[in-house]
Structure formats: structure tokens, C-alpha cells
Length: 456
Ligand SMILES: Cc1cc2nc3c(=O)[nH]c(=O)nc-3n(C[C@H](O)[C@H](O)[C@H](O)COP(=O)(O)OP(=O)(O)OC[C@H]3O[C@@H](n4cnc5c(N)ncnc54)[C@H](O)[C@@H]3O)c2cc1C
Image (cartoon, rainbow, N blue to C red; front, side):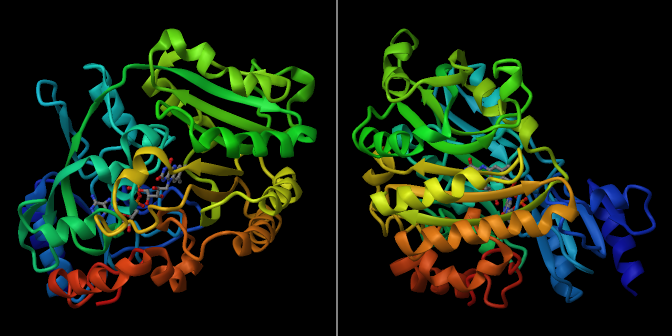
């Protein structure tokens, strides 16, 4: 019966419908986090919204679990399911720019690399993630933090409308004017409310930026973090910069005898006039000697792709996250204790600034509640070998246990691990009840539950 139903779906779909006997199945079932090893009943590589509607109806009518995959980067592996239906949007990556209106429409499976390449041609950009292979879909639905956030707000603050396939197979367009409640919930509520087949964004004039990574000695860590706290509080909004802990990869800009050493790093992105870039980055050069750097003018998409090599698909992942109002001396001391123990070149800890334009939006204007927080921290454990799981997971947990009590209760949903589901209320604060109410309207049976789940 099920095979017959799959055959029927295959006959109707424009995209590929891949089940276990298909030679592409092993590849089609993989997600970015290699720790996740699931065997879906079928992977539907949708070609258009019609295929998405067919796949949603197929799953619901056959009582199968639904996983929606945009860029596939979810650390908890929400883009796959054992015995369920994966709606994979990898075939829907088109981006259309309207340069006159300064807007762009991205299909639900586009990555930020796809998006930035398309908009860069017109000297335009909007807030997206710091890695080019991350999906526009998942990143935007959780909020969207990136280099341009202090200037232009979160990705959701630039969202104008979304095309959505809801749990009953309906297709709706959500915006301030239509399905406004759904539009509110989509902006931070994650994949809880339906499959977004297309996102329409506002763009801003950004072509080239001045920036890149700078590495400082660990002995300067407290200086660098204290400086960063003061500096970023009222830095020009054109500046997006975050500190990190990083083992030096074997790259030409780092002295060879320092490859493999651990540094406190700063990654800066000055999106103002290029000629002011050097001056804008001067405070980062004055705070402590920079041991190595790769800083200068570059196209915005070049910075967006600069660290892709450190985080290829197929690593093991375990992450923890918090919002932070105030980076206290005690918190800085905790970072100085645990950051330098980062166990793998792929692993890191970032402190993203979410002030500036992110604070221009009220806490209840979108589902993203932590508009008063100044930072979103993420302890991102990423490493190649399962044999290193204990060391890396242990580092993430120790670091998190030391910093969480010095942070807000909630964290950014997109940085959460599979074992963070109980934090869901805290992540949304006062917005949680309204999210539940929108969930009851659009997905009363919780068909879309493979996410940081808001239960109807
Ligand atoms: C290497 C790396 C770097 C990152 N950098 C950043 C960063 O700079 N800023 C930031 O904010 N976050 C960042 N993140 C976190 C990222 O936002 C989340 O992992 C996000 O969920 C990834 O989205 P995706 O589409 O790639 O993932 P997926 O695994 O495809 O999806 C994640 C979730 O979103 C849902 N979803 C995805 N697309 C759609 C869609 N079109 N319609 C409905 N639901 C959808 C899925 O169902 C799932 O629940 C990063 C993650 C990684 C692994």
C-alpha cells in the first residue's frame, strides 16, 4: 500500500521522489551533521510549491512524520526523520533580485551563498549568516544573525513576505497585510508553521566590505573581550564584529610555526565606505598586538564564504547557546577559562552582537523575543571523528555550565541542540503563548514537529 502510494506521488511530482531502493538514497538521506543517521521512508526533492503541497498531503494522509530540509544545517538534524517523509528543498534554490525595488525573492532551499551571489551583482545584500552553505530557510525562520545585523536588523527584520504551504496542504502568502499572525510567528518561530517555498527580502546597498579575521595571543584574552564589550556597545552600525576562540588552521596568512596554536580571534565586517575601513578597524589593532590577520577590502560574499572550509559537511556537531544582556567581568573570566580549551580546529565559540538595528524592533513585534539582549553566544562543537565525541561534547558542556548562569535564561533557537527542547518557553519569553495560539490555527496536529517544537 505504502509503495503504491509512493509510486503515485512519484508519478505526480515534478521533482525526484527517492526511496530506499534508489541508488541516490544514501546520499539523499544525509544531513550536514554526521552524528545524525536516519532512514526516511522517502525523500521528496521538491521542484516547486506544487510538489511541496503533494508531499505534505502524502505525509499527512499516510500518517508519516514530516521533516523539512532547507540548507540541511540543523545541528539537531531536524531535516531528516526515521521512516518519515523528508521534504528536501535542495532543488528550489533560485533567487530573483528586483534591483529597482531593492528586494529579492529566494526559494525555500536557497543557501546564503546562492542569495549573496545573486544580490551582489546589483551591489545589494541583506542580513544572512556567516557561512555560505547555511540555508536561507532555517536561518531566517529562527531569526537570522549575521555580520549585517547591527546595521539592518535580523534576517527576519528584512522579510517582506513568505509563501507558505501549511499542514492541511493550503498555500498562503503571509505578510504584514495577509495572514499577519502567521507572518509574525514565522519571524523567529522556526519551522513550526509550514513549509516556506519562497522568502521575499528587503535589500540594502552593500557590495564590498572591509574586514576579515584577526588573531591575538591568548594572554590578551581578557583585554580583548573587555575592549569588545565597551567598543561594540556604541560602535557605528556599519560595524559587525564578533570575538571567537580558534585553533589556527594551516593557512598562509598565519605564521607556519603557529599553525595548531589556539588564539582569541576577532572577525570584523565594516559595511560602510571602503575608504573608511582601515580607520574603522583601528581599534581592533590598537587593543593588543595582532599575530596574524587576513583583513582588507573584499566582496561581501567573499567574507561570507571565507570560513566555509573550516566547517565542511560531515562533521560531528554539538552546540549550546545563550542570550547575554551584559558581558560581565565574571563572564569574561569564564570565557578566558574555557575558550582556550577549544579541542578541535573546527570548533569555536562566538559572541555575536545583536544590538544596533536589532534593538529598533520591539520584543513583541516578531516572535524573536530577546530584543533587549546585547549578545547571542554559541559554543559550537564541531569535529571530524566520532572517537573525539567525548572530548568535544565535554568541552561544550563545561563551557556552557560556566557561562549559562551568567547569561539570560533563553538562547537563540537556531543554535540549540537536540537536548534543548525544554528551553523552548525560555527562548521565546513573553511571546510563547501567542506562538502556541498561531500553532493551533495553522498546525493543530503538530505535523511540523521536527524543530524546536512549539506544541499546539
Ligand atoms: C556552520 C553553521 C554556521 C551557522 N551560522 C549561523 C549564523 O551565522 N547565523 C545564524 O543565525 N545561524 C547560523 N547557524 C545556525 C542556522 O541558522 C541553523 O542551523 C538553521 O536551522 C539552518 O538552516 P538550514 O535551512 O540550513 O537547516 P535545515 O536543517 O534544512 O533546517 C533547519 C530547520 O528549519 C526548518 N526549515 C528549513 N528551511 C525551511 C523552509 N523553507 N520552510 C520551513 N521550514 C524550514 C527545518 O524544518 C528545520 O526545522 C549556523 C549553522 C551552522 C551549522
